[in-house]
Every structure is written in C-alpha cells, then in structure tokens.
Image 1 (cartoon, rainbow, N blue to C red):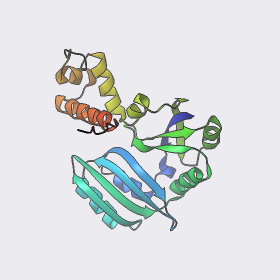
Image 2: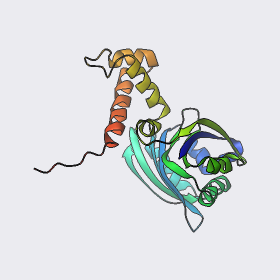
Image 3: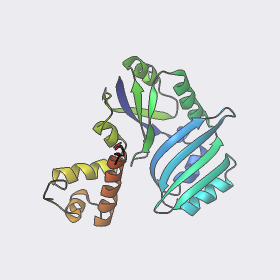
Image 4: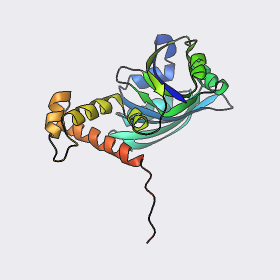
Length: 220
C-alpha cells in the first residue's frame, strides 16, 4: 500500500462563480473534512475555515448555486455544511474518484498559496491512472509519495502547512525537550509569526496528536 500527496492549483477556468465570491472574503481556509457528489448532481461539503463568518453567510444565502447551508462558530474558526450545484470541474474530479480504486485520505487541506492538498491511498497503478490526465482548469503537482504507514506521518499530514512549519521549528529549538529549551517568543521570532499565533498553532498541533491516540479505558 502506498500514498501520494498532490497539490491542485485551479486556474481562472477552474474556479467557479461561488468560489470566486467566497475567495473575495480572503478567508483562512483550513480543511475540507468531507465532500460527496450526490445523486441529484449537487455537492455536499463539510469544511473548516477562519475569517469573515457573516460574509460567508451572506454569500451563501445570496448564491443561486447553494441549496442549503449551516455554519457553526465565529470569525476565530467555524465549520460549515454546504450543499451546492456541482460545477464541471468538481463533477469530473468526484466522478473520477468513483471510477478509480484509490482512496482519498481526508481531510483535504487548503495551502497558503491557494492550492488544495490531497493525499491518495492505494496501489502504484491506481495513482498512475489518477494522475495520467490532469483535468482542464487545474494544475496538479506531486508533493511527496512513498509506502503508506498509518502513524506519525499520517498525523503530520493532517496538519496545515503553517502548523508543520511551526512544529518543525519547535522541535529543532527543543520545545519538546525536558527541560524545555525554547519559548513561544523564540519560535515566533524564527517563524515570523506573533507569539499568540505560535501558541495557537502549538495547541492545535498537540490536539491533533492526542486525538489520534486511542487509549482504552481500564477496568477498576
């Protein structure tokens, strides 16, 4: 079993009208946790974002492509469920997935430079079929590949690009050594982020790691 992680960059042809309006809000996208092409040719998507939540509500409520939506959270972070009309590119990508033997390792991540990071799990032959033809309106770059082993690599792959950067700096500076050899302020100075942002990233990194551990209850 192998994995391949790719980043897809849609060009102007690959961005639908709804995405263009949402992009104008300059949200900080985090991840798409679930996405399905339904029998009525609509797409159901469960996603995580940060930014102008009222702006998102306005865009979704005014868009004729959106049939229903629900948002929970605030500007600091929110989850959204949206069912909207499938565009040509989304339909092509989702139908290709149905016809292929590979699996998509969720969540799908938004990168800082506007791409979508997707990890496929399957055989080498399945990846060859998946990547043999790049759909019109999107550029696909292979980021990494190798044998798939659930564990630390799987956990790290679920972090955002910025979180991986913060984690790498934290480990290199000895944040997780005992005794601790660095501070949030020193990590912030190295990464160019604020101390508050570093603390937020580290908390989310630690939450992702601990939530991946399955600790069974012990009988007393």
